[in-house]
Amino acid sequence: MAHRPNFFIVGCPRCGTTSMHAWLAQHPEIFMSPIKEPGHFGSDLVPGTEEVRITHDNYLALFNDTGDEPVVGEASTSYIHSQRAAEEIGEFAPGARILIQLRNPVEMVWSHNRLLRHESLAEALEREPGRAAAEPGWAVREGVAVIFEQLLLYRALVAGLPAAIERFQVQFPGRVKLLLLDDLRANPASDYREVLEFLDISTDHAPEFAIHKPTQGVRSETLARLLRLADSGLGWFYRPLYRLLGLRGLGIWDYNRAPPPEPLDPQLRQRLTQEFAPVVRELEQLAGRDLSAWRDQRF
Image (cartoon, rainbow, N blue to C red; front, top):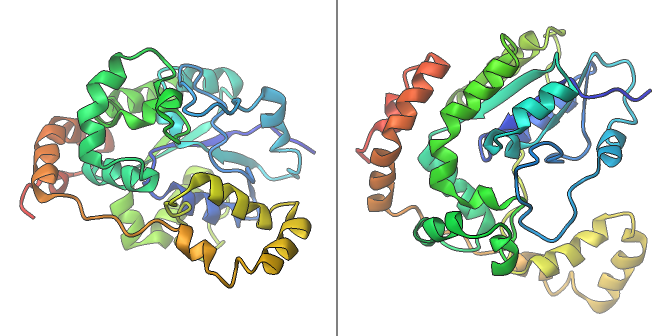
């Protein structure tokens, strides 16, 4: 029996949401969407590819296999960066509970930039003013592979975090929980238990606390899509073909993985730490936590 989702992990990108999604999906009282990042809500977000946004019917179909689980959820980190997602989710699921995961914003934008690998963080920051002023659709015109083009406006993403959190807190009073990636790394079992308590379900369950990360960066997204077909429903056709062509023997999968990124330039890190410090102070107030380490410019 299909149920509508009543639990949403709305952000932030590169803050442990993939791991949390996977851990929660193991709980017998939780059904998590089989697809992470469906990105159905947030009508103000501009798709960064020419792919069509998921339809309402296809979105609801993600939850066709639900049973009697009291918690039905999904995770789309784009929602935190939308001006409209909180209200749209509120109209769809008024009693929903919201989880927001945070980390040092400097590390967040650097990690997100590393995942995309389209350009360096310094290049993206230099191009941001022009992109922000451009007509919608600039990501498609530039050929940038990103779900929504606003996700490449790093300064705007960070600056908008406090207001975004407040939008969800206003829309869902008393039903928004904030988690820090620092805590999740230090004690995942404790944070997992806190989330279960927040969802008002049994805390006896202990998942396999493996670290789940999104796909590594690749040299060619087109080649990556072809290779992923081997693990899709068409694998029966493609896997024998790959073996016949000797692609696995040639190490094509390993070749297509992008090389390890260069570490964040210390001067750029220091500059961004100083620039993001006012935002961190606002996040401290919202989270009720001392985040002075995120403002520390000593490396």
